[in-house]
Amino acid sequence: MRIVPKSFVCPLGDCKKVVQPSDLLRHVLTAHMGSAGSRTVLEIPLRFREVFRGQSTLMHLPYNRMKLDTDECLAVLNYAGDEQQQPQTMPGFCGLTAPQRNLPRLQQVYSHHLPILVMACKTTWQAVLSNMPARPEDVCYNDDNYVILLWLLSPPTTTPCHATMSVLNSALRCGLRKRREVRDFSTRMAIDQFILGYDPHYCILSQGELRELCGSHSAFIEVVIHGA
Ligand SMILES: [Zn+2]
Image (tube, rainbow, N blue to C red; front, side, top):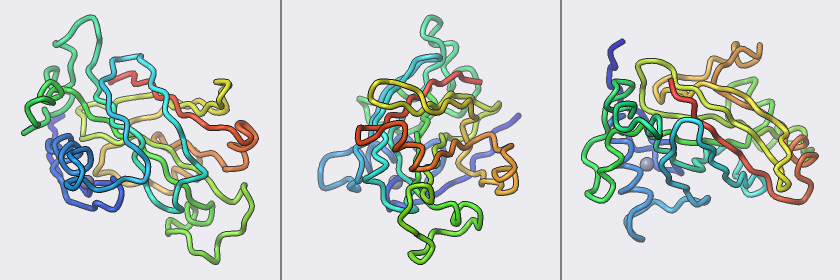
């Protein structure tokens, strides 16, 4: 399968800049993680790390602080393939994805990685089912009315890339664990598949379920990339 580059809208904060897939990492580094003054301020600090196949990344899920109907990027995981066999299994070398271009000198080591964004959104059932943003009149102040969607985004890949997403409490008890496909930026959620439970990309849980799992303590997401 040939990768057809298609530009997409940056999902970080209120950025909305149109970016080519091969410029994703440069854009994140320069527009969102650069020196103060040049970057777009993100409400939730962004994690940035290299990950290998099967390696776990744990991050905070600040569901109480998340703004309604706002896509939040929690981390950029630079997937590097198999730790033991570098560089042949790196996504940009083995043809899984196009290399990232024009990176700042210090980050050029990430040129052949696949940047995967860990995304979260707090919304309402009404908004999910109508595929429209939540309106203030839809919101009743009941935890079960709010839902948290979790998904992973990356530039297009020649074959689907898989990952496991888990939600854990501070004692690392798992409340949800799903294997999902990393979503290409240019694809959209098929709402009928989502409703019927066939959607390969999203995890969903209610704020009530999260509170039951975590009480007044923190919630965490664990992401493990399995690759293609
Ligand atoms: Zn941006």
